[in-house]
Length: 486
Image (tube, rainbow, N blue to C red):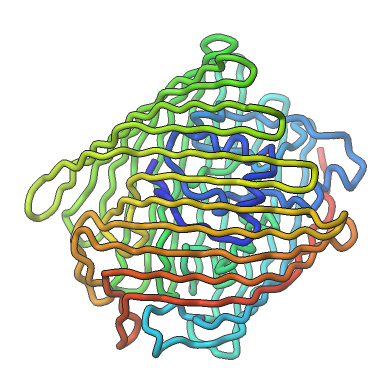
């Protein structure tokens, strides 16, 4: 839908994980709707073994899933449809952050040690033709520096997938709140490194809403409380053995509790047809409409996109896809209605060997503006390399470049950005992970972020246009085996 809407890469190792973990990555990359970088998608860690494997259970069968090339939801990983289970997780995340409050004025940079402890509980109730998922995440972030770096996090997810012969579908709602959210809109400052994805905490269940149907949060913003909610409903119909039709409706909210940032809302739908040409080739055609509006202003944006997509699996280790089409955007502002004509699209190339994976990803489209702009044209390119050094150790190198261009002029107490103003960001680093036993892993990494802009963003009494931050991150994840029940 809007995506992200191409957000910036949010994590060391996460981009690579979504590129190289086949069960989740394959479906994510075949979405004809523009979507953010894979890092924002919850994934199962490469070295954090699936509990179904470590507990001696038989290999899971695929859960009910929508047509992947057109879907609004995804499966994080395959789960046994014949078993119900509980999955608890406990994680600690630490970081040494040179710009802890994420401000755009170098004179206000604050160095801080930040610690986060989070726990989650996921319940899956499975039946032969349906699957119900409930997930809760909660915890806190604390720092000796104090202020908004001490925060609480709450997240809740409910979803259901079903299959009735030729008909199938899914419904999902994902809600999150943090009293001190940071940057890409994660639940707390630990998301600066994207480590929440590393443990799978963000999934809160096997059926996930794709980032393309969630609020755009692709610009680094100051620390502060925020709430997000995304709701998606989808119905699929299998026309023939190779052809399926999909219809999706969605609604999302991004709300800030501090003044000066822009609340955004989006509602829309997508419909399309996917066809498998051969065992290795698939095509799809889709139309999507998205309406964006903002709190405290009559300005609104309509986005109409027609997109064609093609995917080919060249070998078991190499695949690629490309999609794109015209993007017509009527912009309703105080000065009248103007129509912007451009294009939206995405492309992906992925290669995996026995111990190494490589990925390259690009996308472009209209987003909600991430709380900074009144709508934005967002483009991003990301790359990652992941290497299994040994049975227990892995290394990931990742990098991303993104640009957000403002569509409607903004003037608030925190933002001064005329139409056409831009944010350019570079983000990346390295992450080392080591598995400890069957249910735990530790990690150590470094990330750097650099953002430049011809707009002004203010924090307290200071305003600036450029941002630089360095982070050393470390921690561990404890994830016991699933607890089955009937």
